[in-house]
Length: 270
Image (cartoon, rainbow, N blue to C red):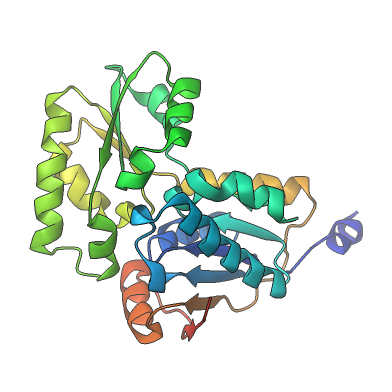
């Protein structure tokens, strides 16, 4: 039985991408759950922030990334970006013959944990105004009041790595206290950059407000897809990190945010 199970193992890498360093928050959660998998992480930093791109621009960028992943023979792709997911995932699933796992605000979780019936999604402006998010709310929280807040410029600020910058504090203290005043008792972080600000966010909204993100849900979904397709790995290799931006800067900030050493990233033209 063990030999039979071993014969079905698939040690090809998994592609994971974001506009920048935000997707690393998802990668950290995935690596906790799937330590034997190998990952190729692409940060499309030459085009960050995705939150200010049009749908057509996003489809163009994500298509380029998935075409690159095809050359690396990945067995699955994780879109570790809410904005890329809500605007491109249906198109990408039609174009590419590989399992694609998206990242979206955890509306179902909000509906489960909120006691006041009022919750919030704190995301990029693009995700906040997306029809896809409205559909999620209608499907999973039809009887709740879900307040959508777009944290303009937060994505770019997290990219710089200074999580304690006055500019970040100004945005958080402007956007979050009004939510508490509106009886919000749960907030979903709808941008993968924002979990790196979790401690600050929790401090501002207080202990009575639950702050949740999508990383764990994405990890569990990826594991389910790999298991269903019988393509789990049993031996990890060295992960690969690439950026369309400045590789040296990405390396420095990625190690800071992840609190671990990573292989030296490479620059990639996409």
